[in-house]
View 1 (cartoon, rainbow, N blue to C red):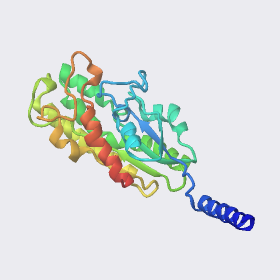
View 2: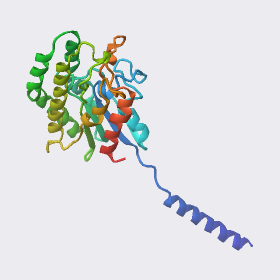
View 3: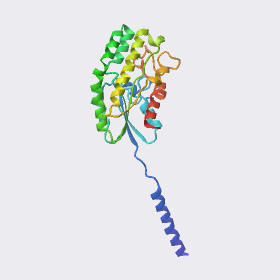
View 4: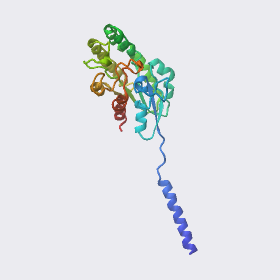
Length: 265
């Protein structure tokens, strides 16, 4: 009986050892760094518990992507009002050799888009919109190159970098949300958004970087300001910072699916 018992113990020990060897080892979480401006931080969603100064929201697409993608560790440094210079000064350090995923929206503040819309609301802005559109490439190309070069050089080899564009804000219709902005100005603001999209897309997909570019124009088009189901806030007189930014639906149904499609989940 003692012989049988000894054999049973040895057999049980062997089985346990094999089970331990067969068990999958825990995989390290993919490190995801979210860079950018207010369209990445979540301005317009009305809740900024992650950072009141940078207006980072749990309803912004970086947080939603992290929640929906298993085994992802998010470093969320996007900040309201950020320009390419701001990104290089205070955000790019978050991108390190173990960074597997990077997302970014940047460039809108470099051309003063928010100030242009404010000018439209308070007065005439047609000439300013035309001038900004004419100088887009000259203004943005070298600044975007600086950002994209830094991302490519600092992230992990093979890291997935997703550059996101900006939506057009308006339709041909006006409403209280477009108070002060004429039909001509709405058309020219949309033309500027399309031109901005083209400039950012061309730089992001340049072979020097080969990033994935996702345009926000088509997804947001049926959900612009003054539509029946807007994904963008119109003018908010009580909290002007929220104006002309994606709301919670814009982040969850507009931007988040773009990132998910780029990452393949």
